Structures are given as structure tokens and as C-alpha cells.
Image (cartoon, rainbow, N blue to C red; front, side):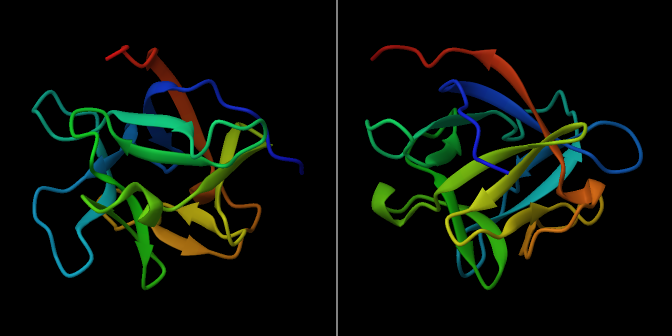
Length: 148
């Protein structure tokens, strides 16, 4: 499938796994490559669950980068086939494209690998894409990116 455009903005990224709504969530504690990114329940606590999705470069068709809305220096990175969030230079952030699939979107790395949520609380894995619901996501637009 060809990549689809995504409106730059602040999003909640819902995982399609069995059970209550689960969101892409940055954990509180960092390890070797940064803070592991998991899926967790919609939580009223100040856990990081809002993400900015924006083009990596200001050119049509550019892939996207994803970073925390509250900590704009903390972007998604891929290491050891897993997803982390880390405050590294923007050039080190992973780049993603989105493809339409039944029930949502598939989020693909620049190497064509898919984000997979095995179960709530598991770290997000980067895997060869398959037609599985654990690789299907819903992007909930929260608001536009505020001008600085």
C-alpha cells in the first residue's frame, strides 16, 4: 500500500489490542537506549501519552518523526528492534510512514518494519509487517501544533 499523508499535530496513538483502550505511552524510567515505549490504559495521571507527528523535513512526501508533546526534544528511536523515546538530536529520531489498513493505520519505520503492540504493558517491537491487529493503530487528532 502507498503511504498516506498525516496532518501534523498532537495525537494520541491507540493500539488495537484486546481489552480496554491502550495508548502508545512513554515509560518513566530510562534504560540503555532511552525510556521504553509501551501501550498502557488511558491514564489520567501525567504519564506521557500525547505525541507530535510532523514531517521530518519540510518537503512533500517526507517521512514523519514522532516526539513527546510535552518534551519536544524527546523523540522516538529504534534500537534492538524495540521502540524507545530519548532526548537525542532530531537527526537520530526514527522516521515513519503510515499506511491505511482495515480498522486503522500501520506505522512503518524507514526500513519498512511495523510497530507491534504485543499486549498492554509490553514494549513496542519493530517487526516485518503482517496483517495482524497488533500492528494496527488509530491516530486520534488532539490539536494542531502550537506556534512558538
